[in-house]
Image 1 (cartoon, rainbow, N blue to C red):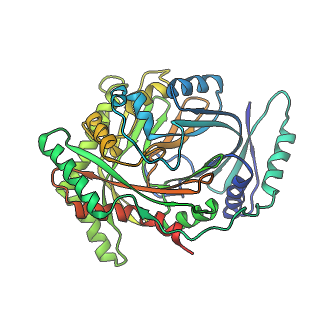
Image 2 (image 1 turned 60 degrees about the horizontal axis):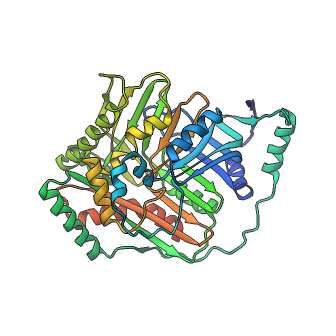
Image 3 (image 1 turned 30 degrees about the horizontal axis):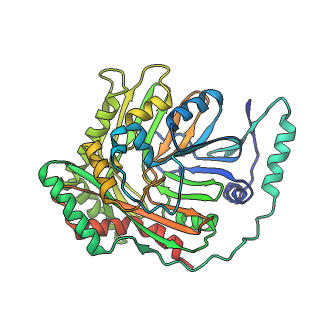
Length: 438
């Protein structure tokens, strides 16, 4: 049984840091933060923390079936991630060809856990969700939670090392791959494809909490996340929602279209206007909106799919983004696994047609995406959920001391390799700054 209790806090920013530091003392941890982002449609929470695990699920095969069984067995709050490579279950045709991939992070297809403690912060109020069993009571669990918070921050087992991220591709190699993708575009194999590249460092040690705090200061975002699964970490400053279910309503908010920010207010406003007026960006964007509408139609109540907002322009610390909101209604008792089979992975990170784009991503990208361009979020006891898109993120495997940052852009027939390469650098900049800052 999960019971939420008020938890008086005098200093909420300090309390958040205290909770974040508790990740050093537990193998399973998730922190989701909206950063109180203003005017983002369908936002429903401030901060959510999940600390410790009473039950876990890690799956590398038949993962969606395993998730469905896990949700039925544990009708509680669940926190976890979906790797991009879960696509092989939602699109079985992708398993026909296997291409060698670099994989320094080595994440499973999906991982979820039932937390021992949940902390929910809304406005100026905090409450703690305790997992009570026949062998525990409220007072005992609350005392255990307070003890976890009071445990001194651990002495780092190794000093953080100097980090210099290097690209998996040279700019020339990237341009060559773009040229090959454009041949597919010219033949009509695809109309749009999201091509990603990796920046990485090997044999390095980072302090995840410190790096996350730096990243969150540089690039506050409405779908920020700090996730730990044993020795694997995700530090995420995502501006994008993949999928939310609220009662019978599904909501997706794909991003496609980017402009840099400028220090000068007049120039910054002009960049924002240029994004909205750019026919190439609008064309790329509407392809993904149509893809989401098509995915929703697989699972939606007939005639319920609609675009709530088209070509919305939203401003973040690093970039302006074009975002649309698509919604639909789903039949009663439609489970999360059934929904994911219909819509995963997200169209903004694949292309159109979706299957053809994913086949070419498999063929041309040398790095396994893993958690990158997958999703992180939560599922409630009533089957509601909210998942982000894992972009603008740092992935770290502490066991093999590998750090990875990936970034991508949408390629269409008019794509210019130099421009697309610069867009990838722009998107990766905040993460690289957070890692290299000393």
